[in-house]
Amino acid sequence: MRRNIILDCDPGIDDAVALAIAAAHREELKLLAITTVAGNQTIDRVTNNALKLVNFLGIKDVPVARGSAAPLIREVIPAEDVRGSTGLGDCLLPETGKAPASEQGVVFLADTILKLPQGETVTLVPTGPLTNIALLLKVFPQVKKRIDLICLMGGAAVGGNVTATGEFNIWQDPEAAQIVFHSGIPIVMCGLDVTNYCGFTETQIREMLENPNPVVHAYGEMTDFYLRSRPYCRGSIAAIHDAVTVTWLMHPEWFRGREMQVEVDCSEGQNRGMTVCDFREWAQPEKRSGVTVLLEADTEKIQKFWLEALYSYQN
Ligand code: BDR
Ligand code: CA
Image 1 (cartoon, protein in one colour):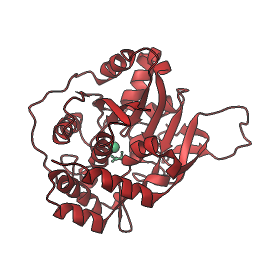
Image 2 (image 1 turned 90 degrees about the vertical axis):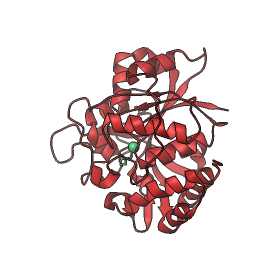
Image 3 (image 1 turned 180 degrees about the vertical axis):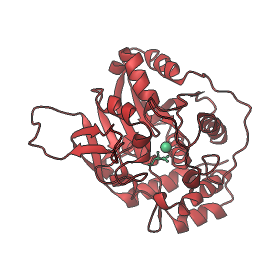
Image 4 (image 1 turned 30 degrees about the vertical axis):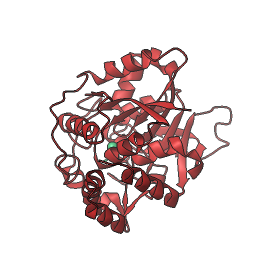
C-alpha cells in the first residue's frame, strides 16, 4: 500500500540522500510535501537547498514550505565545519528561481494534513530538529488523529555526536523533542545506535564521483564531504543518518528495535539533549510508550538499497 509521507528536514547532505531515496520510490511513498527547519544550516539555506533538490531530482510537483528559523528556546547553531557552508558539502546544485509554496511551514503542515481525503493518514518523517513538529502538535492538536506514525532521525540509546550524550537533531531543540516523544503518536526513533553504521564506503563515494550521471555525481560530491568530517565517519564508513528513516518505512524487516520509554534531557547540564532510553521492561509494565528505538540494522542490505536508488536516476 502507498504510504503518504511528509519530509520535515534541514538539507543537509544526509537529508538530501533521504529525499533522493524517497523520490526514487514514489510508487511506495507518496511524498505530499517537504517542510524545512533550521538545523544543519540557517532556514534560508536549507530551504534554498530543498527547492534546488526537488528541481534537480525531477519532483517539482512536491511543494516545499519554509519552516522554523530557530529552536523553541535557544538560537540555532549551524556547524559549517561538519556540514559545509551551503549545508550540502562542496556540491553546487543548479539554482532555481522557485519560491517556497509557503513561508509558514507549520501552518502548511496542518493544512496539508487536514486536507487529506477522509480515512487517509500521513507518516511524518523528521530528519532535522523537531521544532516544526512540536509546534504543529501544540498549535493544531486536531492533526494528531491523522498522523499514523512519526519516523524520525534523532537521539541515541547510547552516546551522542555533538556532545558525549547529545545527538545533533535532539540537542538542537530538546524541548521540541520532549513534546514530540510525549505526543502519544507512535514513533520510530532511528538514532545513532543504527544510523552510525549505515552509510557509504570511501570506495563507493569515489565511484559516485567518477560517474557521469549528474545525480550520482552530485551525491558523490555531497557525501565525499562526510569523509572529511569526524562526527560523520565510522572507520571508512560515512554515515548517512537521515536515509535510515525512509528505509525503515519500506523495509522494517531489516531492523530490530524495542519499544521503551524515552525522555529528553532538557536541563542546562552536560547531558542537555540526551535521549534517556529506559531498557527496564519491568519498570513500567502497564505503560506503553509507543516509542520504538531501533537498535540493530542489516547495514549491507541497506547500503545496496541506497546505491540502487541513487543509480536509478536517469537524468
Ligand atoms: C543528524 O544531524 C544532522 O547534521 C544530520 O543531517 C542528521 O539529521 C545526525 O546527527
Ligand atoms: Ca538532518
